[in-house]
Amino acid sequence: MGRWEPNAKGRLEKAAMTLYLDRGFEQTTVADIAERAGLSERTFFRYFADKREVLFSGAATLQELMVSCVRDAPTSLAPFDIVTLALAQAGAAIGQGRERARLRQRVIDANDELKERELIKLATLAGAMTEELRARGVADTTSSLAAEAGITAFRIGFERWVRGSDDADLVQFIAESVAQLAAITHTMSTVSKEL
Amino acid sequence: MGRWEPNAKGRLEKAAMTLYLDRGFEQTTVADIAERAGLSERTFFRYFADKREVLFSGAATLQELMVSCVRDAPTSLAPFDIVTLALAQAGAAIGQGRERARLRQRVIDANDELKERELIKLATLAGAMTEELRARGVADTTSSLAAEAGITAFRIGFERWVRGSDDADLVQFIAESVAQLAAITHTMSTVSKEL
Image (cartoon, rainbow over all chains, first blue to last red; front, side):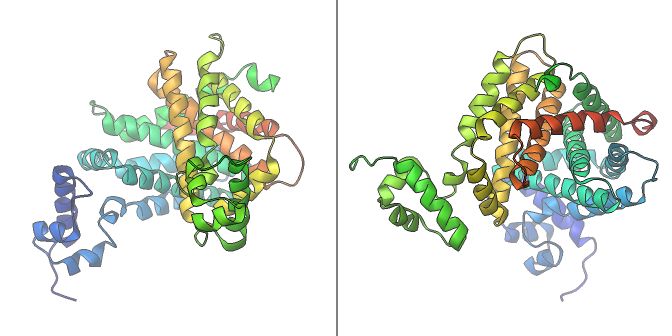
């Protein structure tokens, strides 16, 4: 299995990010990343399935966090409140590393395949929360709507945070986005009644 | 350019759908589709860029319809009302062909790549409506939230319609989904205030 390298995962992530930003994601190989990190390709594959996974390895943890938050939420809460809580917890967890999040976003923005992967990641998160709401006994459509609309608000809050210049908290951006979604849908006046 | 064939596009679509359902999308080639339709591959490529496009050729029309509906909506309407109207119009347009929509959905459900493509198509529709709302002078975040949450409601309404057994109208499913989204987000009571 090769010898143990201190902080190999972190070194690989840092090397990958630097190369993705310098040369572009497409132009970077696993060999380049390993070389820059001073490690072997074999060590790379001990941590990541491929070069794309370096950017998405946090998704599983995020999903676990959201799902366990939905599972453990007080029974008194309405479905959308449960989702809001889960999103806030996720925001608190990922909101620490803003500089890393910024760099990662730049890499993703520059590549259509990565943008699609990010979209799929978010859809998977919404799907996992939907399942967990249903497991709590929430109706199917309500579960989907609450989880998917919540993830939409999360993404828009996240994008404002990661692209913004001020130092506000990610949780704050998410809470604002959720509150705004509630306000916007509630202005719905005449149209839906006419349909 | 070869001779003109009556209803070539429709024949190719029908042949493709039959083959996708019988053999699976992966296992079907453009040559198979052309042969079954009694046409040449050259004719196929006059209508579709590849075999996937047969399933997604309606997206451009749908986008045009939604965007023009947002553009032409009365100025008195709130952003989410505008989006709701656009979704209802889109629903009225595609709600005619339920049997075709059902078959198409079966093909898509069976293939991960197609599911991802469908997701991207919907994200593109949301992006186009966002742009059009912004062009009307609606604030950036409001535009994104209204368009993206609207598309979420649209998709969930569409899925219930396409998978459901009763004969209700697609527009009705969409309107219900939108109204439910408004109701769900509005139950938001304590949580967002505490954040």
